[in-house]
Length: 573
Image 1 (cartoon, rainbow, N blue to C red):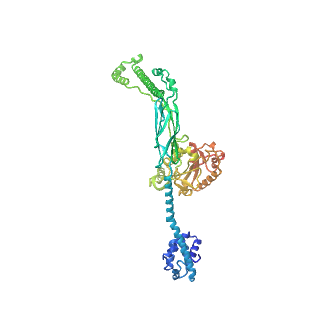
Image 2: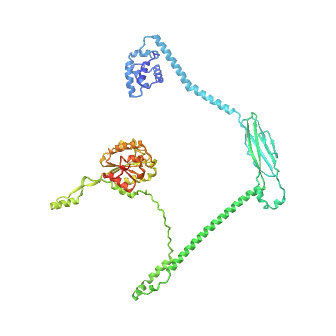
């Protein structure tokens, strides 16, 4: 084994870390047997690189060990292709033994590959074929193919033609009765068919009084239940395989048919009566509405046609002349009032459907965001400063040059961090309103909105589905941090009323990192202030100005973001 070709090189490369196995070494031996890589040292190196090297690092390791180990000249390599290594080219007996061992190893590998590629699939196919043949030749259970007759009229003949089948061709089957009533007779035809017939004659009444007066004892006859007779059949083949068929024969009489017809007619009568009652109720309600409308119309007409009071008839001669000229117009308006239909008063809706959140409306949010604007004069002077120009004229006595100043530019930027899901699910509508009003109604230079869950850890997310992730360091890096203010919106654990020291520590670390990147920080909490005591929110309020969600709370938060003093009551916790 020590004299196998390239064994020392193969061993050193494996120790150096190359992912080589026995298959890789056998591949090189087969290539050498086929005549590849035996011309010179360069051809041998090219062959080994092709089969063993997978990366640039592997190539460097291979070149280093190949130059150290493969020292003999190329003439000796051709003699040691299959029988010896580069260090033992002089001993012929050792070469022959090594060659025999290599040939044996190749014969074993060829035999194993032959078993793998041909013999094993053929054996599996033959095994499956034998199993399928045995299953096909196995005895199958015979079955009944006919559907039993389960009802017979009292005093009438009952007949059931029995049929059975066996899927194994050539098997004889036998049908027999396991249990049946005495009035039934079984006849077997011995060809897979049989007949079960008979007449049920119990409790047959021939009284003419019942036929002549069918309504005399109707209820008693309807209450009676039909008789039931259990039947069980069995079919057996010549191998002993059996199957059974069990059913119950119900004896029906004329009373049962009467009961069914009576129930159907009774259901129809009930439906007809119900429809008539509903129609009568609708007609009466319509008549009441029309009568009330007519009374209302008559009352309006009577009020319009009442005679004037005596005080209204008295007037001056001058007024009578004026009224005489306008009498035609008054009559025309009166006739129009009589002809026009009465006005219907619409019922007042006591409930108003709104989409606003009760503590804070959209309009109030937009107004609060506008207080965050930071107007600065920057850029090229393009606007006339009227006050400075007038002051210059008053000092110099003449207009020499107007005073031009740069335009006012809003440099305020907002970083809005919103907590989603979990305990913040009830406040999802409010968070959407805050984001929408800040982006569209705030009139700020730039508004960046990020989302997180419970507390920011490693990543912030651009979307509310946590798909567009950004590292916290990248999200907080902004060129104009002097004009950027950060507002966080979260319950900080106050909704569930628990105290989580780990969450307090992680949030404190994030706030410390955030203070180094932005100008000012504030926190909005949708839970009332009295719910913060003894919770994670009460501990976080010690590190950042925290305000409860209200109009005054948002004003105080905006004041803190502008750099003004805001009372947030951290000492209370």
